[in-house]
Image 1 (tube, rainbow, N blue to C red):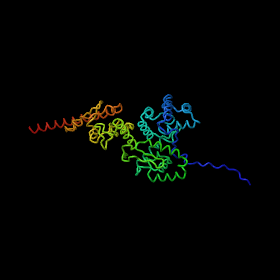
Image 2 (image 1 turned 120 degrees about the vertical axis):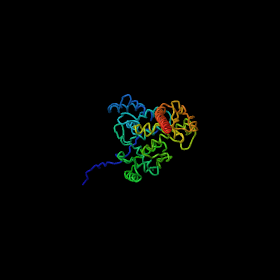
Image 3 (image 1 turned 90 degrees about the vertical axis):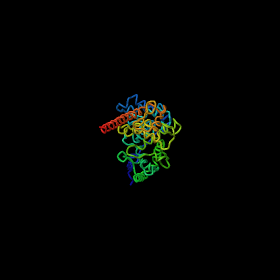
Length: 393
């Protein structure tokens, strides 16, 4: 008796539903294809005013046709991949309804260090690997989760197996602590082996390592894993984001090297050990106001020696728009210190419009303290005078 053919029941493979889907067309952020494709998308969004419009399928089709004219592909699947990668990387919002506020700055800069730094910020803050033009999963921030797992790991490094473990971890937005522990990583890696994730998704693992290598203070090797180049630079506290703070410090260091040839105190021009990456407008104030970009903007910072920072951080000195030092002599009484501090001046090349905006904020705080100091001193003189007068009576 012949057997009736029964088609095999299709088994739903969990790996295709529960992993980080980082598919990209271009991996070189400096390449013209990467930048021109992104520029075409941003131009299209602005022209159609899609930030303020309801998404329509025909917009996506029209954009694909425009990209195809610039960089023809063998099929439109590659065109769609080239568009969707910018949503996954964080440059563009799902449904083409806007883009990251640093995207145009990324496109407009020709400085490779600045381009790399802007990419790092966008990739860390806004990348969402499971998002696409027609899928919004932006509540899941994979890079943010991964690098916090690295920052909170006791060894400050993650093996290749740990990265794979993270890539098969769904629902990370529901993990309140924002990272996985060593034991949790081991559990997830054991799961990845059961579904043959490394073998089936080799390219996506490789893409992730490529982009992680662009992050400051990160060394990523797809054969060994990732680690901090200088773990001491990673500050773990409840006030600051350890990765964004690292980007901020790296940007200030790069600025100093470009302007002065090495890392120096911006006031004294000496390469002191232990330079402070001092905020002009307090980062705690920026964060309390919800201004995350301000909190980690290198223009909101000065490289200072610890001695100078003691006075600058307490608003005992500040600077005018020409870089001249302002001194609160009601707080600084020693004549030698006054002479020393009064000789300070910020170079004009440091006084770009963004930094001047932050210096104005600092100067207002300086003036508030100076007025209070003057009032306190005058009150003491008055009380002393009244006491002496009373004693004479």
